[in-house]
Length: 374
Ligand SMILES: *Cc1c(COP(=O)(O)O)cnc(C)c1O
Image (cartoon, rainbow, N blue to C red; front, side, top):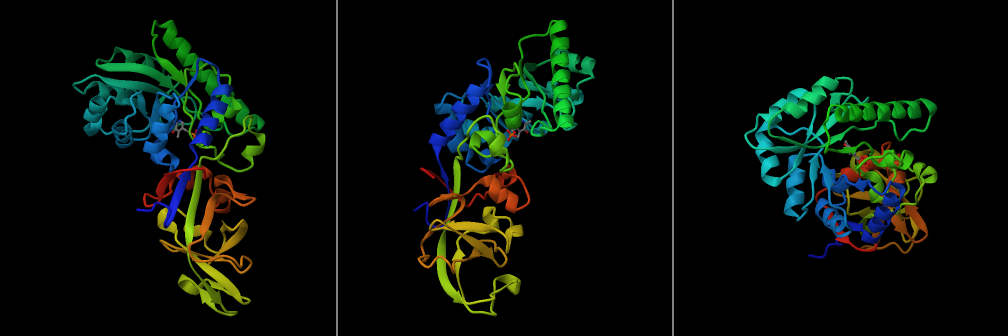
């Protein structure tokens, strides 16, 4: 089947390689990237992205769930795959079978993992202030006792920064405190004769704003895809990143909308003048937030067209009154470049009142993923 018939994602793997090089150059030589390819590689397609990164020399990856880890293994990923989230004891067998590393979310969970009959590889999560997963950093005895447990192959210790994207004085101070708490746990373990584990702390904004930390891994997500959570971050970033993903659809039909007529469910849009409108083959089931009804934009023939009316499950309407050449079958760009114009994932997200991470990770299963120039 033709993959660009209805609605699709174009992946620019040259941009991916560019981003890998830019981010790696920012990090100390000993620090390897451990890309976050959770949520279908932030909507890009985990198999395609995982395989490409592996060809580019990236070995190890992190995911959110066992299922995502198994998918990567089945796609031929051979390095370490760390499950960042919770895994039910019923799925511990899959950890062992597929050779996945599991995050230890706290001491009691380590005991549960140790109760499984086969050895399991783990990274110990340390909570330095985000207060999500990880044993609290001041509970050093609990952390140390994890090494006394049987059948745990502990290959990593890590924490997660929660305000590393913010550059205000309090945010910087909080992040530096998190970093200090992490180092003191690492020092405590070394002081107790515990060695041989890798350490990691940074996500994308940790790399961009605190690149010099002496870690073994950086768990890079959004930046690797060439997106910033918010569009203004592009201007302050120490590297130039290129977007890997473009999101496109087709004009299904073009028609007149007469002054005074409504359009779409609920007739939430009313034409104030004679208009030409186009129906587009993408909707909220593909990941276009319904909240963009009467609000969002798309690019057609290098021009910006406003979304009008309610966004439907599979379709949406745009105003092409000022784009006379717009015709059925034409390409529409929701995220990406078109002529001289661009809507970045960050711009798109800002219009929808969220961050690009959410927009990208919710892009639907139904979209085709095509490797191309974007
Ligand atoms: C998702 C995630 C990352 C990657 O975050 P980005 O900000 O997208 O780079 C890193 N670490 C953990 C624990 C995560 O959950």
